Image (cartoon, rainbow, N blue to C red):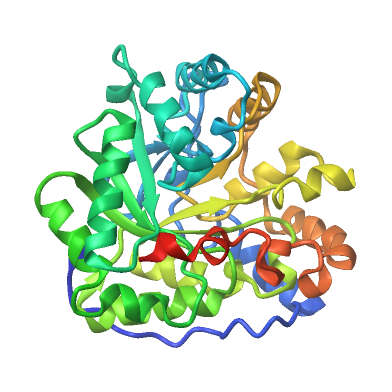
Length: 348
């Protein structure tokens, strides 16, 4: 995150309406490589079957197009299995690792910290997130994350779950979490700063606006980006264009809709990952809770080629009937995925 004067452009609001058939074409073009973003950002490594590498917004940092999700890496019954998955992912070309202070009571960070011993830490771009909205709470969580991850710094730290109307104001208030994050960055504990959320594009836009009012620009923004998103309260439609315009790194998450798309059997996991990769994402973060799922993610990286507007439109057409009204995107419409709502003490 850097200090700068931001202009505030006009962006469509997230009113929950689906896209019309005419808008399919517009969205498909915007979702394809031809939509004004350099095709070099999607270039596959010259070596056959290599993981594509992309640039993280304006940072200049190179990252793998697929990132390893932090929550799922703390769910294995065996800690050693978690460590093995993480290391095999890195050996397979995944260089971006996601995590969070609250994942699995801290177990996700602890296991990742152990996996990053023996030289693995130097091979990755390490990200975690904090929930604290106060300066004191955020400072404590940053330090706890560093301790668990066994590192003196993370490459990216993000404000987690921007899902409430007052989250941006609390973070940027005097004595708020933004002060802690900027101090941590100045101290070398954090290189880049971003935020995440899964509820409503309007919350993302407000966070960007409040940051701009404080002369701050984020390095990254994370949000759900999948085949269903275009049809309801769409981050693709409402947030992605602004991030592209401002040069902010786009982190896509929930490419399989938290597993819903895989269970529908309407799309293959590879199709879902390729759709998200085809957006102007720096990284598509996906959960890998087994070696089999890890291999699936690695295959998606190795086999990705840019989709054209017609291919994207066809995927959106196939998804519109079951994706309407957000009924399958429970992270947008219910509190089931809102960790900080169920644990408000994390926000202190």
